[in-house]
Length: 216
Image 1 (cartoon, rainbow, N blue to C red):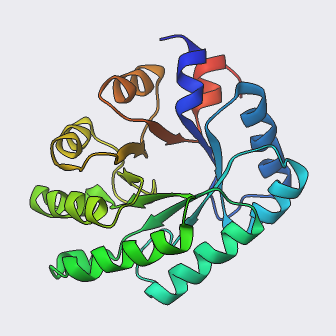
Image 2 (image 1 turned 90 degrees about the vertical axis):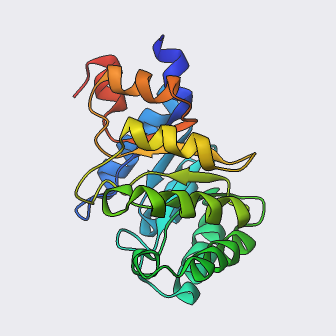
């Protein structure tokens, strides 16, 4: 695949706790230069990035990375991020609820956050490394029923990242209109191509520019 076919599917990401304003600025400049789908940055930098780069599509994360914030807190995070200029929200599900089998609560939380997002994009991170296939299938139903826009594999902060087997499982069980985002552990151009060819609409990675251009 040509680089120009890959970059429009990349959420150019920097979510490290040590991320600085200078690093966020560089990330945004790269995103504009290479025409990535978005930048995915901490919520505390959304207002800064939107003010400096108003033409940029900004994504941020809520309930991140562990997912166990209350629904009210996640909704407040989403509302604040959108007010600051975010167009896309990547939320982490309550993994404890998943392990408890509380899928009705999980579905309700996703729906509540989607209601806050309105026409903004909501991606639901299910953190596949902690889940059984049965739990992943149930979450495909939750994401679909709650009318979220994407199901996403991973935060990149768990014990493992995206696996091609999970992308194939998602494809079998998500509802119409739900797209797939892979994130975590995407380390080569071959990985990028593989996930795109398997049906991912987005890939979240901090490495795409380096992988595709040979930069630092």
